Length: 301
Image 1 (cartoon, rainbow, N blue to C red):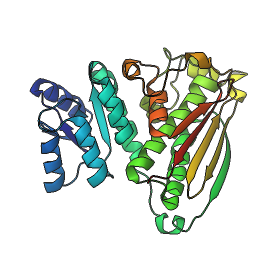
Image 2: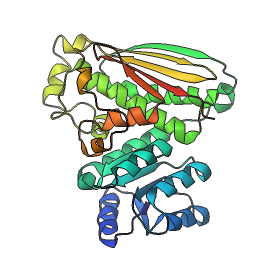
Image 3: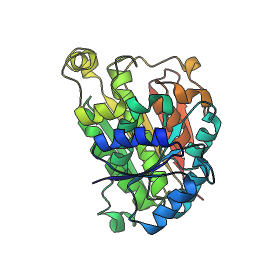
């Protein structure tokens, strides 16, 4: 059973979160601060994921994220943010956290966010020695609007990054999440032109596929939406990985694009994927039309 360690100093909130996760069939352990979380990581079988509050006594969420990145980089961390902690949460995302959920949306988004992060973290490493011989590689994909293609594609790209040794396991996880968000955005918001109000959460889409009714199902068999493709260009070298994702939709107004690292965006329901893309990658740019994004991840020092 997948094990999750929760660092939360509020007993009431910890009980609520434990209940949500146990109902989703996770094994849960709760500690009151970051220091106790690190003690559990040293003494017990490592959890599959750490879920942490930002403001706690003794050691806060930001300090915990930094310590886990240094000593336990294989373990992803998800933040629980609240009003007043937005700036420090952005800093934690930049320093190694794999995702975040506003406390105001825990009951709606937490289980999906955990499922997505765990999914991307489980990359097949069977080719690690062989891929370690790679010096450079390039890929060019043309994808149909089939969400089931995204899982194996992200897995393949992370295997390539493992061989190129561009970043540690935490960095690769974060790159995988950024790519996944970009591809889902190209499919649903770009090619199918589904509004944020009609979108399922990212994880529900990945687990369930397209719903049996509604605008997604309709447009998967309706021209011009069903005929559009997603193009992915990937170039990896010993210095950087570059990912270009282009859809055939109408694009979007770049003037409405929020700034990188804007704390106010943590509570926005529509900007979650873009915020993570901008935080997890070293460079994120869009073409003038708004239907192509280029993401760059440079070698970590």
